[in-house]
Image (tube, rainbow, N blue to C red; front, top):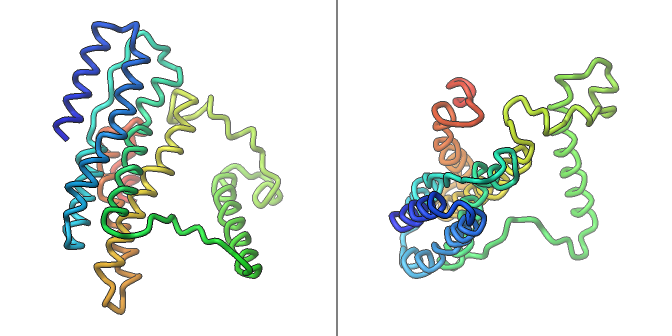
Length: 244
């Protein structure tokens, strides 16, 4: 944690003095942040034997070491450009989380698999998966467009996708941020949920409520770090919205 923080400070100093090299310095810092945890994870975290300490170590690594890293102060770059949005989105730290999760899970002797099944010779299961996946996508659009529908057709399928214009976001000034925040959540947050679920399933393996406990426990561990959204977030969520 100290090393990453000092590398960030050094990168900031270099950008202040060599602002014409901002792009190069940023990418060196980004790649370094993503790969620097690999040896630490394999050598030190691989030594942890008890499941509960593996869980605590992962919560610490993800929520305090990685996500508490401060963003770089960029100079001589377009404030509405891709690089500024990439820096603000935290995508670099999301990729660092994914790398950590992969090497931690492998170091502890588990398979790294996001549970998307293969359907060799199982056509019925494949069709069921496609159906459920399609319904999940439909529900996502239904939830959004239900707020704008003026006719029942617009509620269920005749959606006006022109309303989803990232350049006119009510919350994010930069259109790139709309996409990068989504990608960041899809990588970093799902990787976090994944490792929590794996470890909690092992911790509760001899309990009748193994699955219930793992789902509830991972949900709590996932929700708690979002408390910060009520205090320092570009989205500026209210305490009540953050609580929900």
